[in-house]
View 1 (tube, rainbow, N blue to C red):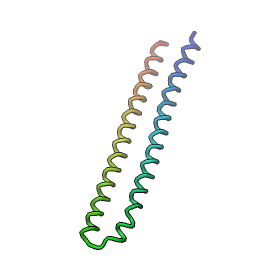
View 2: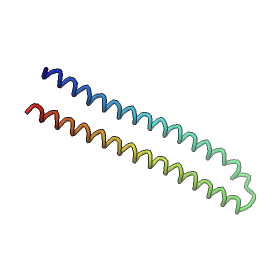
View 3: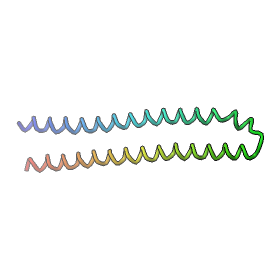
View 4: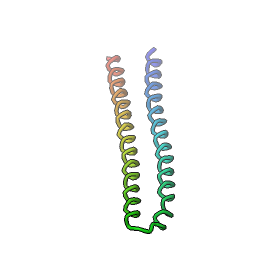
Length: 106
């Protein structure tokens, strides 16, 4: 019975860690897609910059690029912050679970 409890506990910890790893992989895939989309949008503006005839138009395009960059960076920051928060919650849960598990043997 003792061995079964240990195996269940280890299995639960392993499942939580695999869940966290899967979430990390999803986040990386989303980042890759977002980065590729962002790069494509930026590269698509190149011909507009090259063909801009007035300084005012270049300044408007520059402002547009800054807004796109800021939006992109905000998305990355928020995603990382949320991932860190969820990861810390999982780690706290595992720490508490391990502490309770060890207490149950005393």
